[in-house]
Length: 174
Image 1 (cartoon, rainbow, N blue to C red):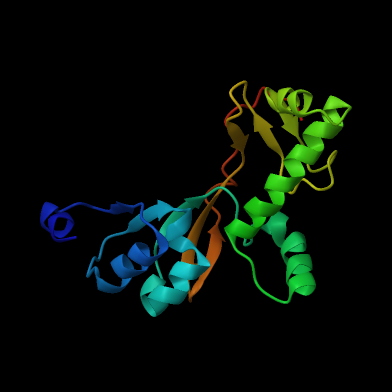
Image 2 (image 1 turned 90 degrees about the horizontal axis):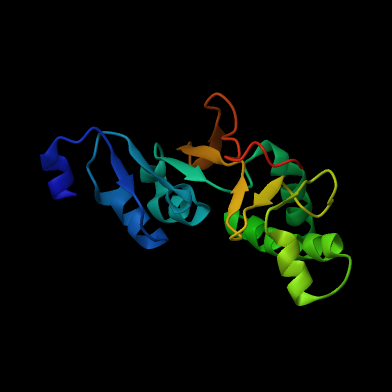
């Protein structure tokens, strides 16, 4: 942080774990924007950093604050009597995508299901357990819409840029 302050930088990009992110926010003395990824605006960092957590902006792949995930989040809270964060959404999604790929493969076969993921898309409309539309390239890399969040009043909120950040490959048909 000393070097960042001395550099005269207009912003800092923070990519650290939860404890270090919270420490950065509590101890930084930085007046310019702090930008990061999912962890920076996570509920754990907000809890650890307290009021110092307000202000950072982060790019997140999945967040319970996203409007399209609110129904799932409310059901999760009711069923488990606890809150969730991006990890809960990722865990749920991690289970539903294989189910959808087995369905697309037409049989319960590990190799066929794996092949059904590559160069394919799974839409929330056609696969009810899938929470957001998602595509995978031939290497299995994920492509889906994502979000920008900012911590305001001790809570991460989805920031409306112009729209939700779209998936990169618009040619893939859901």
